[in-house]
Amino acid sequence: ETGVTQSPTHLIKTRGQQVTLRCSSQSGHNTVSWYQQALGQGPQFIFQYYREEENGRGNFPPRFSGLQFPNYSSELNVNALELDDSALYLCASNKGYPGSDTQYFGPGTRLTVL
Amino acid sequence: GESVGLHLPTLSVQEGDNSIINCAYSNSASDYFIWYKQESGKGPQFIIDIRSNMDKRQGQRVTVLLNKTVKHLSLQIAATQPGDSAVYFCAEMDTNAGKSTFGDGTTLTVKP
Image (cartoon, rainbow over all chains, first blue to last red; front, side, top):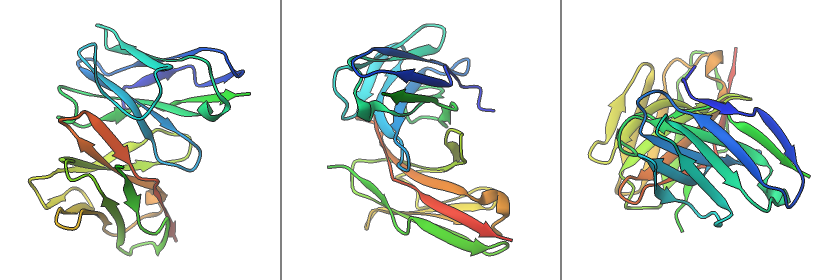
């Protein structure tokens, strides 16, 4: 167990809907990162937050947005869902500044868009 | 664009043999490199990492080698066990830009 939890485990949405995924980091972890992992591929970096501010972003459109809260939890919001958004969404956290310490992943949320 | 590629998407070894998984990266600004293991239905699990100011780092049964000249990373697993069967990902991070890039993974199968 990594101490990083995600909810829900599975989710089914239809095209055009909006979704919010949640992540609870380990206590004391200042950095949280979100990834999208399509079937059979490596995780793709969406963005990361450090001390509640976006610190880096991958090649994802603005309809992917996030928040990090003072209690170390985080949200990933996706608007106007598309079929290609179907994937496993992973969050990961680490202590300190991004890249300064070991990153621990949660089990992921499996999102299916119909 | 940035990319991290893994050579040989599948690797099959005999139990007890040593395994070597290779990875090529393209972003010369990357300064932190990590190997992860992912089992079916789980999130990636940290194995070992290395900073760009090092060229070798050892852990328990695992060694990571970094060759910055040719932008190559490798993971060596000694005395491979059936429990090592999983998909292995290398990842590079440009800590200044706050960006991570993962490869597509190598599936390691250990035959008893």
